Structures are given as C-alpha cells and as structure tokens.
Image (cartoon, rainbow, N blue to C red; front, side, top):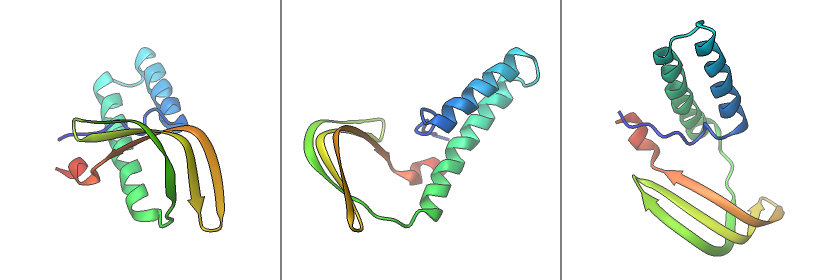
Length: 106
C-alpha cells in the first residue's frame, strides 16, 4: 500500500515523531509499531480532511515552480492571495503539496 508522509512535517506530526522516537529509544515501543502508528496517523489525517472539512478557499498568485513526482504535485506560489468567504490574506511565498487521496486506499 502506498502512503504519503504529507502530515508528518506539520507541528502535530513532528511532535508525534519525536515522541515515538523517544519511546523506541527507551524500549517502550518497537520500531515496527512506531512506523505503524505514523502510517495510521497519515491515513487518519487524510480521512479527517476528506470527511470533516467543508470550507472552500481560492488562491491566486504567481506560479514560481511546479513539479509532479510520484503522483504528488508541488506548487510554489509568490505573492499569493488567499480568499475565504469575505476575508482575504496576502502571503509572500507559499508551498502547496497535493496528492490524490484515493491512492491512500489502494
């Protein structure tokens, strides 16, 4: 089964990884079980985003770089404008990573 490690670089993903590393070093957890926990974390995050997030946002900006590798798109935008309902936010530089969530269930 293919799995994406998209959420591991988020704040919660990094804290989980650090905690699992400590538990493996202390002998509380086996490395195999720690890996299973991380894989389940990725699946749970993808499922939660798919089923619980109903908001939509529009993004406009200058496309600086794009790449497609291993079924994952990466976009880097400069001077991006995020519009949500009646509010908007300008961001100097943003990196967007996107993949097909259906690939997680194969």
